[in-house]
Every structure is written in C-alpha cells, then in structure tokens.
Length: 534
Image (tube, rainbow, N blue to C red; front, side):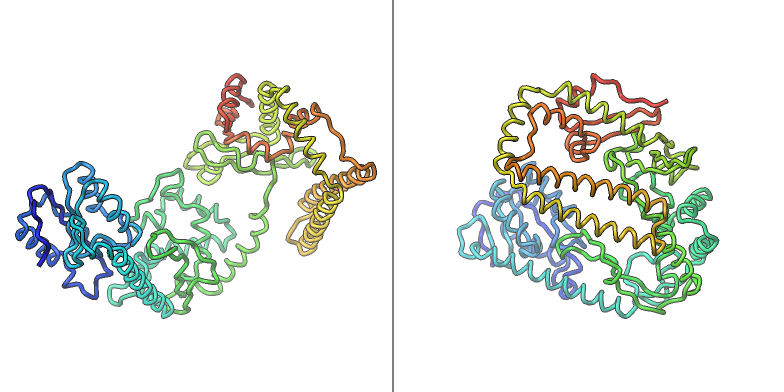
C-alpha cells in the first residue's frame, strides 16, 4: 500500500494528528482515533520506532501555533525526531505558505523525512508526486478559506436574525438555559446596570460613576464573568470612565441585539479590527430590556451635551513626550484659574485622576510652563555643549548654498498664500462654532489670537520673499545665524524636540528626567542636574 522504507532503524518517528471544527463534515473519518489507527498500522508494516504521538485536538490548520505541534518542533531541534508522518497533508496544516516552509525548508534543513500517507508524499524518495505537493497545499488552503467563508456567512445570518452568537452574554444578561442563542436578564448584574443609568440621570459624570463603583468594590464586567486580563496594569480590575461610557451607550440594555462590532482581518489571523457603528448589526426588540427607552434617550443627550468639554484639547510643546515616572502613563493637563483670571495649565497624572481613592499614583501637579522652560533650558545647554561649530558651519554653508540655488520665491509665496487661505478658512469655522455655542468665548479668544498670530507671521514671510524677488536673490543668512537659530528655536520647534528626545518623565518628587534618543546626548544629559520643583 505504501512505499517501503528500506532502513527503518535509522528513523525516530513522530506521528502528528490534528482535528478541528473545520472537519465537522467528515468528523468520523478524520477523528483522532481513525488517524492514530492508520498511523500505527503503518508503523507496524514498516517496523518503525515511534518516538511519540503528537495530538492537537480542536486546533485549526490555518495556524501553526498549536501546543503539540510546537512540542514536536522542539523535539526536532533536539534531534529526538527525524521523521514526521501524518494521515494527509491537511493534518500538517492548511496554510500553504507555512506548509511550504516546513516541507521545503525546515524539514530538509533539519534532516527530517516527511510522509503523508493518503497523499503519497514522501520526501525521502525521488517521486513525481512530491513535485505537486505545493498544489496540494494550495488546495488545502482554499478549503480552509471556503470553510471560513461558510462559517462567517452562518454567523452573520444568525446575527441578522437577532440571535446571540457570542461566548459571554453582555453584562447584565446571561445565556438562556432553555433556548440556544438567546440571552435573559441576570438579576445581580442587571441591578448594577440600572444603578449606573440612575447615577447618570442624576448628572454624575462617567468618571464619577467609575470612582463610586470602585469605592464600593463592585466587580467589573470582566471580573464578574471570571475573565483573566491579558496583561496586568494599574487599571486592571477597576471600573474606568470608558467602561461606564460603553455601558451607557450600549443599546443592548433597551432590548436591541448589538453584534458585529469587530471583524477578523482574514481567516488566517486571529486579530480583529473595530468596525464603525454604521457597520454593526443591530436588531431591535430581541430580548427583555433593562432600561426604559426614555431614560436611555435622556442619558444619550446628557453624554452628547458634554462632548465639547471632553473634546477640548490644550496645545503644549511637550504633548506626547511627557509621562509619569512612577506609573509610566502619559501625563494629562488640567486648567486652573489663578488670581487676575489667569488660566494656567498644570500637569496631572491620569492614573491618579481615575483612581484617586485607590491611591494608585500621586497627583504630580506642576505648572506646564515651568516644566517646559526647564526642559528647554536643559536641551539648549546640552546642544550648546555638544554642538561642533566648525562642522556645523561647513554643513550649514553647503546647505545654504543649495537652498540659494534651488530657491524659487514665487513658488514659496504661492505656498504661503495657500497656507493663509487654509488658516482663514479654519478661523471661519472656529467663529461658526462660537456662534452655534459649541465653543465658549474664552476658548474662541485663545484660538483666535493664536491663529491670527500664525497668519501674521506668514504674511511677514511673504513680504520678505517679495522683497527678495525684486532683488533677484534669496534672503541672506550667514552660517553663524543658522547655528544660533537651531539652538534658539527649540521652544517653538516640536519636530526638533521629538527628533532629540524619546521620553520625558515627571516624578513624584517633581523631578524632570529627559531620555534622549542619541547616546552622545544621553551621556551629556547625565552631566546636568535634573530639573526639580519644590
């Protein structure tokens, strides 16, 4: 029946067996018992020494990240195995790229002979059948793709019918014991959901609700369901404002089935991507609601009314660079009004903001301008110390010469005028936001002053370029000016800071620690005292 193995004592054989849900149509013939029986019969006929039998039951062939397959690979690396036998190639895997890798590269490199019984593939002999193994691998891959499409089609059909197909019911519900794909109210969790909505109706923010739930020791939905977090962080096991917001906006609590929020990238990958709300599958009136429609609508209106405050963003030079030294999370900012109606920004630890009562971290409250000035002063000092003026002069002179030769004032003027037009359009939009009430007067004045200053600076550049155009030359600047400009523009050059600095940390003791991207600057930074605020 099979090709006779002439030297069986030279081989330490591994039998590999795999079974997954994709084999449901032919479950009996592909069963673990059937595969084992076939392989053992082959071992007896060929007088093979079987080192071990590796079984992955319930694992898809589209992924090679299977526990017993990995164990077999480790044994091959350890030279415990030099022959692998499967019932057919699809048992090895259904991803033609990975299957080809093992057949064409990995097994030959490690001196492993591979035999697929039903396909007649045997890499230990010269056979024309071996030449068509890539095509067999592709056919197995297409089979997996076809099965994936069919399974996806069935799942989406169930979703469109309002049937629940998830593994865990939404918080506040549980899977029905009487009816498949149906959810019913879970009284203990449902009471928490109703309370969250009641607190929102009272006017409490999502953050305040989260703090209250944490203070009372109420388990999060994940903890209630007995799920283990994939990674442990300062927020693990705690309610967050995002979790509360998700609960308040979830239509499942008014009796609508909401599914299909994510979709797998493809049939070979487990990663999913989030879908926009318009692509979700929502079926109305599929189960008993927890929340009255009128209450739900009112909560949505209250959330929407706070949108403009939550989306307010403050611009500052160290944005995205500065983190909490203790917990590692990026620092946020908060605005305080000092005497004389002066609005000042302060750094604040976001972990502390969310979990104040749990004492997860400390406030780290320092004025943004104080920290920024200290960082810039330190960067200037290091740049001044590290800068080789002779080298910079040669580079700057060369760059200045190229810029002068390539300079086209007319083109630059056109680009600047286009920027001014965009800024003016942006200013019109900001003014419309003010008229509609989306933007308050204080924010409008701040944004208006900033945009007006940017437009004025561009207009001045245009004036200089037009003067240079009349003279027939580019604006002149000597090399010393260029070097000085490099050092002096740190306070406005975010690109420069990002290029030099990988991370800034603010400690509980109000110390500022700067991490540079370049070893030379990092060494220089150790010679300067860290900034400290008391």
